[in-house]
Length: 467
Image 1 (tube, one colour):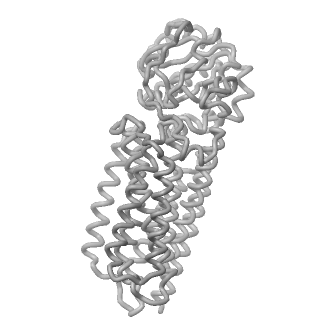
Image 2 (tube, one colour; image 1 turned 90 degrees about the horizontal axis):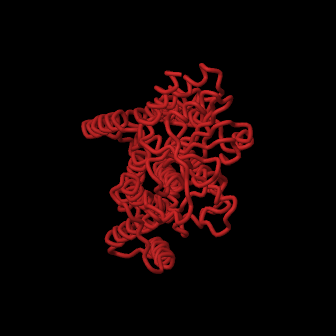
Image 3 (cartoon, one colour; image 1 turned 135 degrees about the horizontal axis):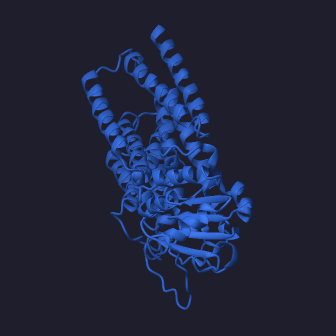
């Protein structure tokens, strides 16, 4: 009895740390400690379950060798992967880890359903098991496809004819089969449950395959919310309050973040899932026709920045690819030592995952108060001397404001063209992940600074130091 009370107390402590950790994650200054506090709470919940949990017959878990062997292997693999991953590969690692959470929820469903499938009065429990099984499986297979897309293993988006009809039909089959298994106590239920698992696995793949790179931040958030919901079902199944609380928090936070990301693109979640926006592969070369652009040299860029009063940097995925975050921070410090005000303009969907640019710049010790969100920085562009766009594309495309026929029309963007001078650093004139040309590159006040971001910034720093 004492062990049972202790277990509930530890679950309560763990739940409080989840809430506190999530609250601290909302601010960059407290995010690191918030993550550690939530992880500490999870550790408490895990060990409390291992040593204090008893089933209805009063039996403890046992199998300690298997449990701790699995924990040891998982800890080592996860630690090494997190330590070695490059910042450019962080989005696919998030997808991979999220997929593992979905797989765990799916496995719980496959393991537990035989204990309830033929029992009377267990309809609600079976519904929870099937819910966790289906949602966890969709999250797992969908996350693996997202991983393949982000990692470059799947370079093209696949969109089958009648895609929406096929996916809707599969969804109805899943719901119908789950309802059939709940209502009728059939003899070969095990076979049909595995069929349900297989159909959900296929649905997860078809769900993500046609969605393009421009929508990947939204997809990652959505799949994350799926995993949280599946974990909440598992917590309800086991009566584990820590798992239930953690799952609800992850699911609700992921859902809110998904909606925030959709608002940042001025698109509905339905259009993201069924519209396949951004299905043109990033990197494609566009025909510029009669449009012309201006080149600028590194030395001319250095002169412009050196005599500016205010410079705003717009980071994008190209900055992460070039691993140039430390160089951009050095440039910022050099300019500020000469009396230039430097800020960073952060678009909500810049990069390949939510908060990608914030994490990238935090790694190079950029002060948090210099990272300014889109709504706050947009009014400042008119008083900015130079905007340096590094590896960003779609989030600064004025077509979102001016071209009703553009697929990104209505999406809130960084209004960099309001500044006195815009300098865009890119490797080439290739399109971004939305697959459309950027009119900003051909504006009178815009100059193109071609080259690898790290090499260009390093050369720019050298030029400034020589002045």
